[in-house]
Image 1 (tube, helix red, strand yellow):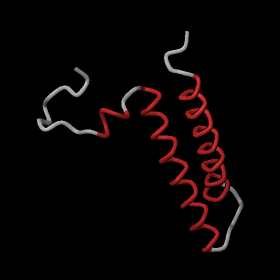
Image 2 (cartoon, helix red, strand yellow; image 1 turned 180 degrees about the horizontal axis):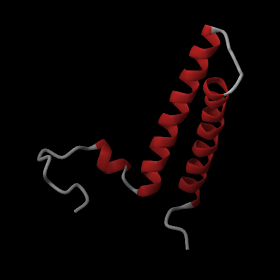
Image 3 (cartoon, rainbow, N blue to C red; image 1 turned 45 degrees about the vertical axis):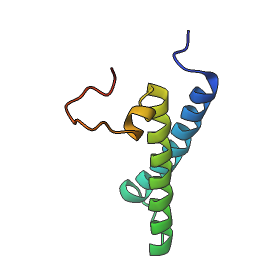
Image 4 (tube, one colour; image 1 turned 30 degrees about the vertical axis):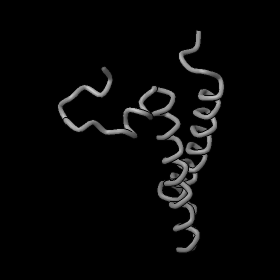
Length: 82
């Protein structure tokens, strides 16, 4: 039995795969022999950052925390998951 609906799961999987692809490219550059031009490096890092943001958002939605994170409570000690 799945914890989330299929659309949320598909969104998460898609975001994970996209971020994994970008982070693998970052690793090839920083840990391997690939040497891009400065403008290509900037583009690579921007793409990785955007993919990570989409993944983080999809992960929060998968965990059911997206609404709790979007609307902070007034009291920082209050449990947002009540």
